[in-house]
Length: 200
Image 1 (tube, rainbow, N blue to C red):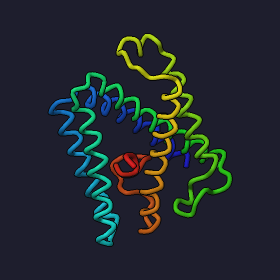
Image 2 (cartoon, rainbow, N blue to C red):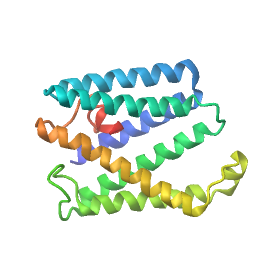
Image 3 (cartoon, one colour):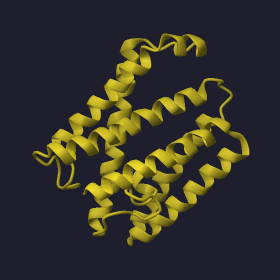
């Protein structure tokens, strides 16, 4: 487990800045990036599931997810990049909180759909997501500079909603991994598994 955890940290340190740069840069580079990620995710999903209705469900899930991301980044709103980073970082902290709290605190399992998911992991996901939000929201210079009009109540609602959707997406992929008896959707990301293991 320790080796996997170290690989997870190292690959995150290497991949996250590159991904953030591509998103920030936008234009053709971002479009190439998002299309490549979609193709890899589609390939992993197609390899993982066998039933045709599961394949169709996965394609709908992927098209909706990637199009929403693409549309937000390419919108005419000058603050779209900030919103994207806001969502991504919440998801990252949700994932880190769930993984670390769940691995080290363990405790009762939350559902048979994903046997590794624990109540401590869920609470850890929310805890780190809200902790990030407090830090992010209190950087007055940052918010004043981009003129984001987000009240503290709306911020808390978004944090809870985004973190919840992130965890449900993780359960969605975990259910199919358990159904088809595989640990990871791929091997492209050391310590994480496949691309689907991260974008869920």
